[in-house]
Length: 220
Ligand code: DX5
Ligand code: ZN
Image (cartoon, rainbow, N blue to C red; front, side, top):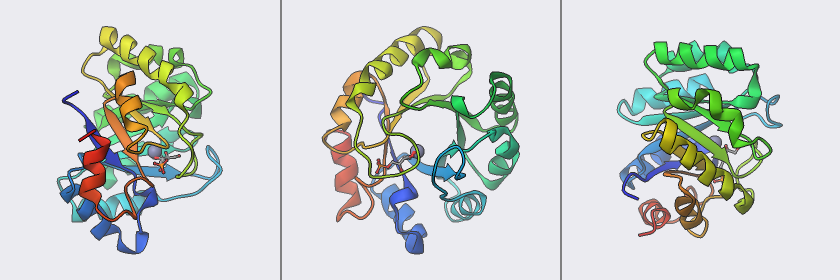
C-alpha cells in the first residue's frame, strides 16, 4: 500500500524533552503526530490536553497533529482543540449520544479541521455506519483505550477488514487507522487487514533509532 502513514503516539515520549522527541520522529519520516487526550472519565487515565497541543503547534507549524480524544462529551472541547492547532480530531462513538457526535463532527469541520470517529474493541463496525461518508478517518482500537504498552488484539482484524470494505463503498479516500500494540511484528497484519494509518507509541519512543523503527513499521 502506498498511502501508509505512521503516527507515533507521544504518550510514550519523554515529556521532559517533548520538542526533541517530536522533531526526531518527524525527521525519521513520521507523517502524523498522534496526541492521546484522556480525561480520567471516558478512560481510567489522565494524560495531556490543550496546552500541549498549543505548544506543539507553536514549535512545529507544519506538523499534522492527529488528536485522539478519549474524553466524555467531546463537543465541549471541539473549539478549544481546533484553536489550539489540531489538524484532525478523532472522537469516540461511545462518548456521547449520536446527535451530539454529529454536532461535534459538524462543528469541527466548520472550523476547518479534519474529523475521525473511533470504536473501542467492544463496539461493532456498524456503529460507525451513519457517519462514514463524512469522515476523514476511522480509528479501530486494538487495545482498550487508556494506556500505552498493551498487547495487540489480533481479533480486531476482521473489524478492520469490514470497515475497509464499508469505506470502499461509502468513502474510498478515508484513512483507516489502527491504534494499540502496533509494532514491527503486528504492523504487517494491520496493513494486510486494510488499515493505512498506524499509531505506535511504545514501539517508537525510547528506541535507539526512530527512523529505523518507522521504516520497519512500513515493512521496509
Ligand atoms: C491508548 C492510546 C494509544 C497508545 C498506543 O489508549 O490511544 O495511542 O498510546 O500505545 P502503544 O503503541 O504503546 O500501544
Ligand atoms: Zn490513540
